[in-house]
Length: 118
Image (cartoon, rainbow, N blue to C red):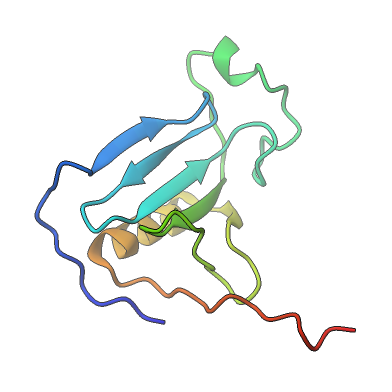
């Protein structure tokens, strides 16, 4: 499903949030949230880091990130045919996703059906 251009007037529910020293969320006025995670346990360069690594460093960096889109109903959007979060996304891919979600023009796949899998 392709989302139509969202309403871009800032509302009280738009915000930034830090997530346990491992990444951040951006919630937009259209109700969608982009999650960008690059800390330990997330599918990125830092997957195998200690869970305390980010809190012990002034600058915690990664060359890529795991991203997800949270719909206004709180459910994860499918960003590929079979996956909700996308792993190992470059800064350019993350920026493009953030812009698309903000503008309401990103592609969301239907939830996969595994009924025919034996």
